[in-house]
Structures are given as structure tokens and as C-alpha cells.
Length: 185
Image (cartoon, rainbow, N blue to C red):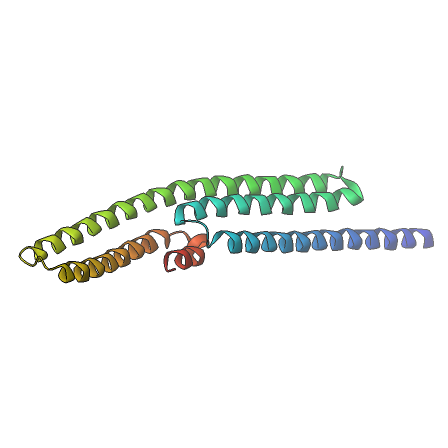
């Protein structure tokens, strides 16, 4: 009977150890994920346009998730890679990853469509401002007038374009802060 108690205690201890390893692996995975996302965002914000940033954002998120899955898998393999519990856990991670990829692909298509619509709308407004400027300037051929109007018109059109792009992208929460930063530079 005493040996049974000792055996049970050892088994409980082993179970606790397994749980702690899962917690540690998850924690390490999340740290790796956060660090990867942070680096990619820092590197890409000054370099990319809104559309490029969106695809880079998806690639970096996929890469970080892969690291996370591998990290957890490796830790599980340390104690026993053949247990049903481990296989279920790995399968759940794979399923979540595949679901995430599918969701992101749909979001990407939606974002590009919204981006194109915003760009077209902004271009149309820009052309209208230019046309209005030309109409107003007829009969005022002095060079100084042209320069003043041109500057005002460009500033106004650029402001409109930025606002439209911001509006189109606000629907994508993962992008919000990065895109607003890019568009307002």
C-alpha cells in the first residue's frame, strides 16, 4: 500500500512537471511571437506602402505562428511525443493555424479591394480639385497665382487621399495603428 502511495505521488509530480512544461512552452512561444511581430513592424513601417504592409503583416504573423507551434511541439516531444494528449494538442494548434491562414487570406482580399476603391475615389476627387483650380485660374494668368493655387490644391488633394485610405483600412483592426502611422507621415 505504501508503495502505491509513493507511485501515485510520483505520477502526480510527473503530471505537474508536464503541465509546467506546457505553460513554459506556451509562454516562450508567445514571447517569440511578440518579438517577431515587433521587429517586423519596426522594420517595415518606414519602408512600405499600405498594401505592401498588409501582405508583410500577414507573412510575419504566419512566420511567428509557425515558430510558436514548433516551440510547443518540441517541448512536448521532450517528455513523450506519442501520447494521445500531445497529438490532440498538436492537431488543435495545426487547426487553429490553418483557420487563421484562411481568415487572413479573406481579410487580405477584402483589404486590397477596399484599398483600390479608396485609391480610385481619391484619384477622382484629386482630378476634380485640379479641374476646379484650372476653371478658377482662367483669366488669372499671373505665375504667382498658379503657384499658390497649385500648392493649395495639392495639399487639399493629398489630405483627401490620406483620409480615404484611413477610412478604408479602419475595417482591419490588425492594421489600424501601423497603417495610420504610415499614412500620416
